[in-house]
Every structure is written in structure tokens, then in C-alpha cells.
Length: 308
Image 1 (cartoon, helix red, strand yellow):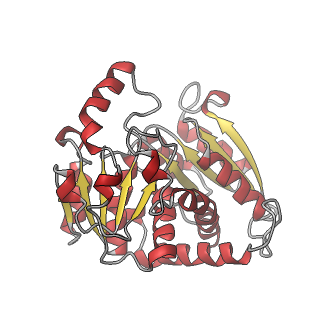
Image 2: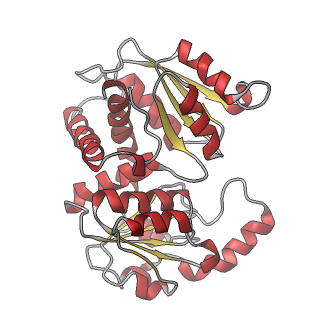
């Protein structure tokens, strides 16, 4: 039994094994309908709890479909439907859930909720997203890059915009997969200094370059995300738009990267805000491959958690 909490906590060889398994499973499903079961029903007889304190499209559907394809059953629970940290401690909830299910995936706000759940559960816990990190997304992103361009090792990955939770997991991955990482955005939206410092201390090349035109020069991959969180106020939203407007990914910016540079966005995208429709729908964009690969990677993560 093994938790999947953050990329920086897992050995590089184990992360590579997860990606190899995801690719194998994806190829094995060629020609099958979405509801068909995998040949190897790893989750047969298993029940998986999918907990969502935050709304979700891709995480919710990809995990639910993945569990079904692997022969298991899932129950989707919103934060409002359970006593998660209100009326009952998270520790007690974890202990109770462990008596009912074989695996827990939680998409929550505070990292402390995830960590307390993992500490007190006696079944594996998967980080479906916290305010600090989003490791499942970045595993899918790396799988997608390597499907199109081969090994990501030694490549230049440029993050444009807000140094948020997805950005943080990319920095974790830079160390494990051996690529260079560049952040370009307003200084007040820089990624976590502690995460940057930890990566640099391991020899990872991390650069913070405020001039986005300079940052994307020679990029193999450009990544962005929404400027505004689903829970931000109107005042915060207006400020973010003003600060981040110079960091919109458009065709002119893309031409400064390598000609074959890929573009990624974890979605949902606010078209013509953080990225123009011409880039999102253009030949360099792999956003829908990226979204699909959430399914295959998360299936491999669930397998790893149970069989490790």
C-alpha cells in the first residue's frame, strides 16, 4: 500500500514506472469502447471513494471512468455531503472511510486536509488537487509531452502566468524527470519560494524571468493556466486580469519558442484571456491529448497505490 501525495515524495524510478504503465494500458485499450473493461481488472472487487471539496470536470470523470474500466466501483462524495472537518475530525473520517473503501482520492483546498487524511487512513490516499499542488495533472502532462516529442529530460519547460498549484507540481517534476523549468509572470505571483529553493538545492535548473518574450526563447513546452481561481472575488479577478494581461499566450509569443514547441493548459481555459483561441486550437496545442491522459495516468497511479 502506498499513498500518492506529491511528486517530490516519490522516487524518479517509481514515477517512470507509473508513466510506463499508463502508456501500456492506453495502448491495450485501442479499439475498445469507453465503458469496456480492461483485460486486467486490477480494481475488481474494490471500492474507491472520490471526495470533492472543490468542483471538478476532468478529475471527477477521469477517476470515475478509470475505476470502472479497471473493474472496480466508485462513490463520488462532495464536501457538503460528509462531515469532513466540520462535525467530525478529518482523522476520524479517514478511519471510518478505511473500513468501507479500498482507496481514497481527495480533491480539497488545504494541503493539511490531505495530509491528515493520509496519516490516519489505513488505505492508500491520492492527491486529486490541493491549493498547493496538483501532481496527477503534471504526470499526465509529462506523458503527453513524451508521446509527441520523446523524453522530456533536458528540455526547456516555460510556465507563463500565475505560480499556482499546477506550477508547483511542475517544479517538483523538473527534479524527478530532469528538465529545465522557467517561470515567467508578475513578481507577486511567483511560485512558492520554498518549492523553488528545494528544487534548486537538488541541482534542478529553475529560472524566474519576468520578461515573457525572453523566457519563452528556445522553449520546448509552454504551459499556462487560468488567471482567476473559481473561488476568487470580483476584485481579485479584476486585479489579476490587469497584472497578467502581458502574459497572454498568443501566436506572436509562440513564435519566439522553438518551431515544434508544444502548448499545454490543464483546462478549463478562458479563451482569449490567458491564451488565445488560435493557440489553443492550433497545431502546437495538445490540450485535449493532455486531458485524455489524465484517465490513463490516474489508472496507473491507482494500480501503483494498491500493488506497491
